[in-house]
Image (cartoon, rainbow, N blue to C red; front, side):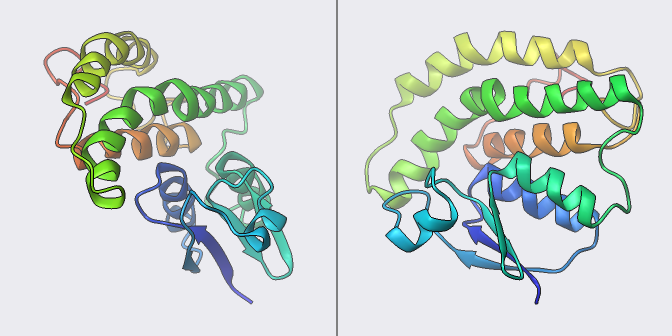
Length: 190
């Protein structure tokens, strides 16, 4: 039986798992599951009601970070977690930072400009977008800019890892919201 991802493509957390599987060249099936108004059946496999949730045969596991850690163990090649203990911890930290602070910095513009019009038929709140762009994003982007070495192939240990997957999938939301990272201010992050 193949891997099934329950979720929808616009979710950055679903995107993270899809990119992770793509990097490992593991086939999967995407089963649409909206991130709101969960059925009792879905809540049995994803008790927090979030997407994604992955089924691997009869085994299910929710939460994108837990899913990626599981997939690393079941599909170890190519490795997407560093083998060095300190780099491993740093990659986990960057993943958590992306899933929390960067999600906040990228999620509001995405929600306002993509989710509200498409799913709720509401106009975006451009004041909320401007506030995030001007107040929330700068310190988050400053931090990440300082974590990236010039010319490195990845954020941690100079090679592509879960840290890059997590950051990249969050930043992709900005493109969907018709924004970008200012390359003159944050060239490495851009």
